[in-house]
Length: 415
Image (cartoon, rainbow, N blue to C red; front, side, top):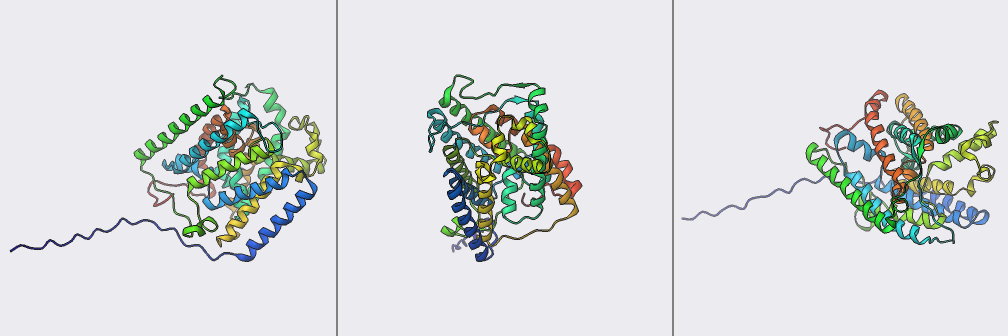
């Protein structure tokens, strides 16, 4: 007699489901759209046409950053603490697309309004090394980088308003000290993979892609060795609603950010940046308090910006757009809320903001202007910025617990 074999019940592996979103905060969404509309009309009526366009590009940047929680700070922290390179690989994908778009723009000198586009290419010296290192520490204490601070403010994370305030203060102090760092200390000339090597933009593009592939490969090797926890899933919708409400895949956000940075370059002739506006805002406040801001080396030959409206500043338009975009995105997901402030995170935000602001001025930019836009522009200083900011992150892992801030651990379920 034969016996019938019983079918084996195979249980599928459990897959973490993204937590559900709250209902949309419709009044806040409507309010954000109204404010955006009014500011767009105001800029169109009082400023060059570039300004309202940059506001809208900034809005899309903020929307993208919030929806994917696309972080530079968290990417460095996850890699340094537990060896998780998921976010850093998304950075490499973003940079690969950005370089692909930047190369023809810079090579052929095309822009929307007839100007000459120029990449973010800066000198390599002590100021860059010190500034990026300080920024790396600061972003881990302050709770976010430059772009992260803006989109966290837009999402209502209360302590980030403190980070932003002291980010501005630090940027202003850095501008006051710029002569010492930029002129009195040694530095090499700016180095471009495209124009300083004879490779041209085609050759520099190929070399850049190889570098990104190597970095991505290294993160995979690190993960195989350390077996880190995965990134936690974010609240999200399903289907087409995910475009408007819910988390976006990191690589989709990376592609969107690269395209938007290229649009920024085409629109204002320079790539995306954040912290120059902080320095402008702080310098205007310092001048109102009686400081002789025009004597600072940072403003040499550019005093017109000090006396013009902040709404004439292209970086300011982008920053306002990022905040508004993040606000609308958070409200659309039902996620906008003010968060708790403690003594620990307040102290960390003050110190972190000061270090980021000061470091950004020394290092010719932040995670956006120096790292993202610098590397996309084929500037060697962008790579050095990334290495030094990662070094600062390693130190900050030991400092965060002093302020009650968490650090990912290998035994965590998610990081």
